[in-house]
Image (tube, rainbow, N blue to C red; front, top):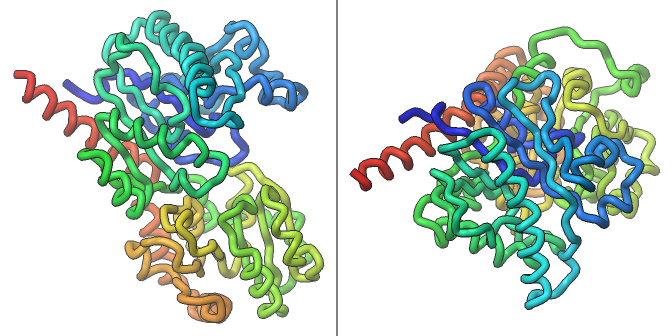
Length: 409
């Protein structure tokens, strides 16, 4: 029996057309080079629908969301074996307290999702399949007993207890999902440790990077983005959403300490806290807004140093940031806070013990930069491609299947 003998039904928290790339989507693209992958988007609720009716993501899915029609979509530029799938609208229930009503409506939502899964299996004549739930424990706990994937894989990507919205119901639901799964994948050393207390079969499978995209900043001469055209100073760069994970005071401290440089922030402003520290009032801070992943290498190429100023907390202790390998694939020096166990990178990044050291390491990183160091960083990142992660995923699954087959025989 080979991995290619199985279809993959992937239930994903990140949607395939989200503005930011995700580990789930990138892994799915790689797996679809050899296997049929049915990528089920995290369901939209009725609240999502009424609040965002005019958005492209809703308008492009209206038939599927309201009527269960045209649920399949082939995506231009992706492998032919990749199929995006949309479920009908579900009920918004996260605001409810734990109890009978929540459980009843959760079961109803599961029925909506399961009807889509059932259609996928029937209409595509699926026989043996791997069910892969990627960090979406809110759906699937009450699937019927007739649902029998050959292997059930659950992937955890963050400490779900550390975000107020997801923690409300997510902690107990994820614990149950982890207990039921045949294989549990964890994207950080800390998550691997936490989930190993619940499941006997947990594997460390960290995030990676779309090397073929970000290595362009290392290998090619790219056009300078218009927001950077008039900058004549050294550039300190950050790529990613301005989220709850960031130490915004450290952003400000960096900009003020390095007044002779420009701090460029590429990403959406998801967290208004950045306003409270006065980042927008500093002349040497530029916000570019969100950019498509294909545009990011153009910005990365003109950064003299990249930074990851994450808070040091229980949440960030469980994080393995995608941007780390993206920065390194571009050959760039990286300065980061000591938020998680990332010892595998200690020879190619600068890890700060405190805020003062963080801002000082930026000068050192820029001064020490060289062609030799750029190459070393690139080589480390190139070993962390999504194709490499997909091969690791296949190996983990096949090891389980082979053991399963031996125990039956």
